[in-house]
Structures are given as C-alpha cells and as structure tokens.
Image 1 (tube, rainbow, N blue to C red):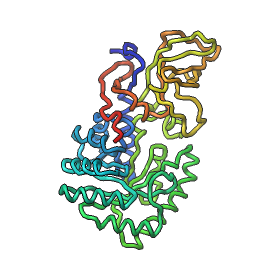
Image 2: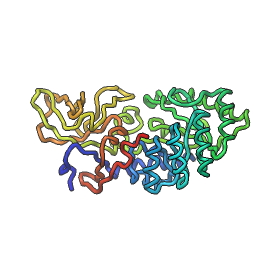
Image 3: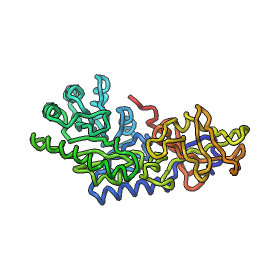
Image 4: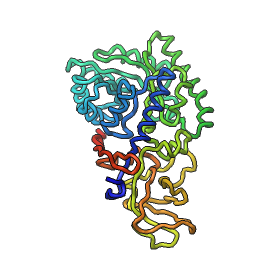
Length: 363
C-alpha cells in the first residue's frame, strides 16, 4: 500500500529514519560508556521498545505503572518506573509486577518508600529504589542537603528494597546548544555538591541516572552520570529541531493530512487538528505555530481547532483541496498517545502497522 491510499489523518513512522536514530544514540552511549535506558513514554509501542533493546539497552523507562504492565506483558523484563507511586492499589500492582520482571521505581519521599517496602515484604518480592533529586526543574526531587541524606539512609534501611542509586531529570536544560553549554557547568556544580553529601555520609550510589533528549548527545559532559533516559530521540520532533538537537531529516514521525478547504483567501484547512497533532506549543526556538510542513516550509500551520489545522498560504504558493501534506508535530509524545495505531513506512510504501498498546495508560 502507498501512504496516499491511507485514510487521513494518519501517523507515519519512517523505519529508515527510526533505524538511524536508534543506531546513533546506541553508538554515542557505547563511545562514552553510558547505559541507555530509553523512556518509552514517547512511543508507547512494544515493538519499538524491543528495537531499543536490540540496539543495546538493558531495559526501558516508563512513566506510569500501567505502561510498565503493558511492556511486561510484551516480554520486556527490566523496567524502571520514573514516577513516585502512591497508594495501596498501586503498591499491590507493583508487587505483582515484581514477581515476573525486574522492576525499579524512582521516588523522592520516605512515605512512598515505606509503603512499597511494606507491600513488597508481604508479597515476598524485591523492588529497586532510586532516590530522585531536583537540580533545577522544580518538579519532583529532594534538595541536595543533609536532611535528604537522612531520608536516604532511612529508605536504604527498609526491607525488600534494592538500593540502586540516584535519579535526576535535567529537564530545565533546554534552549539551543549554546545555552546548554552554558547551563551544564552550573548543573555540574549542583551534582558535585550532591555527590559530596553522599560520600561524606558513606552512602554508595551504584548508578546516577539522568539525561533528556535535547542534551542527550552532551550527556558525557554531566559529572558522574552513568545512565541516560532520553525518550523523544527515537522519533524527534519540531521541539528537538528547534533545540538544535536534531534536523528535520532526523524526524521519523509525520502525520499525513489532507487539505479539505481553500475557500478563505490566503488560507487552507487540513483534517488534522489538536485531537490529531496535540496542541502543545514549542519549548525552544521561535516558540510559534503548531508543526512543520515537510517539503512545504512556506506553509505555516498557525493555529489548531479540535479537528482542523489552519494554514497560512503565501500568495506565490499553490494548494488545492485534496492535496496531502506531511506534518512534523511540535511534540511527538502526546501526538502518538492520541492514536490507536501508527503506520510504518519506507519511502512512500506502508510496510507494517503497530498498535499504540500503552495509549491512555495513565494510572
């Protein structure tokens, strides 16, 4: 089947670009002796997770327990949940999962650790624990101070927990490459302070897990980091391009859409809106518009309604009802999560179809 035979809008994954992205990140991590534990929140597709393992990742990262359950059902047996799990029901599900896969959890409180420890002990299982520290994003994570070291000691002493080390998320290091080069030394000063606190307390930290996609290929510049968890690198999107972390030729995902109206002079409408592309705005670069039109950069996707994408069409550009366009989304992660399935393509040929098996798994 040719891509132009698909009913639109539809998500396309270019298998050749996907392969280059897999190979590039795997080679970088091998060169710099970094463990790659990719975050599957970007794709939520077991077939893609298995490809990441084939390229050398020892395990995967997920955001939610339900995502971990989907990946475990697909045969993936080393999973990190990089999210603090709260509640008896979740702890019991976690313990059941720990009976069949190697499972770890990142957390930033004694309360969560105590609950997981109690339920794990009752179930006779072991759960890996990583203590999360905030280095600037101000989302989750303990501060680098003596009080946090006291909490770390108490967590490590709890039964049925396997101490693995430190978890970080430098999601505040965005911008372009020049800005990141300025921010990384500031981040390293915070990391050095954190390590000094652990060292003075005699607490080992077998691993330090961090990383994000914008700074992924600069991960070797972060002091002490042994493992990285990039997600978006697998596909890339307009955010990663504007952050100077990828080129448009590195974007494996496009949404093929059809022009359905050209009645308003200077404008056109496509059949892909916020329910297809997501309404996420850009996090870097010019921070304008809602996607990039592949091979038609003169067309501006300036607005979205739920079912419509609104294009500005320059006077010297020709476009007709029925034309098909391919849109690179601003943020590929929520875009994928809006779809039940994606189509795998090579050139303009559809070669496979994958279900987004972990779509909507938010518990």
